[in-house]
Image (cartoon, rainbow, N blue to C red; front, side):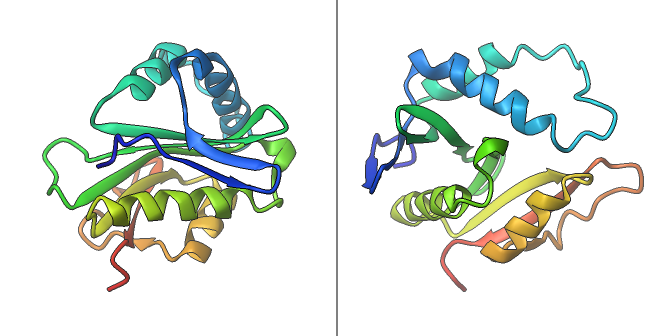
Length: 170
């Protein structure tokens, strides 16, 4: 089940399910990471990201994983089955590594933890959308095996690219 609470440990790094008390730290990491790929600054869209993260953490049909190193959250991922999708599909809604910790293997380890949970839950396909200006994330996803979603090409003025991942390896 996607909402199952699981913890993984490796060296000084722990990947585990986030808890509600961590919503502020998660929202702050999310803001730092987003600031790196908006060329004109993070848009003020009126979203209450702290409330959004609290909701994501508490959703029974989804999961928020966090990577903790030396007591600090340095990575996060949020996923669930999107409404109206097949039950064997999962959407990666958010995936961020603290910019101060890039290139340390955190993203790769977090992605592997997500895939392990998706496989355990019987998911076959994962989808996500990534900002067109976030070339770093696009390259990361390509290295992990994500590819352009053939059923969801971006519109000309779209600010996101839509990617797929074969969880089952097929």
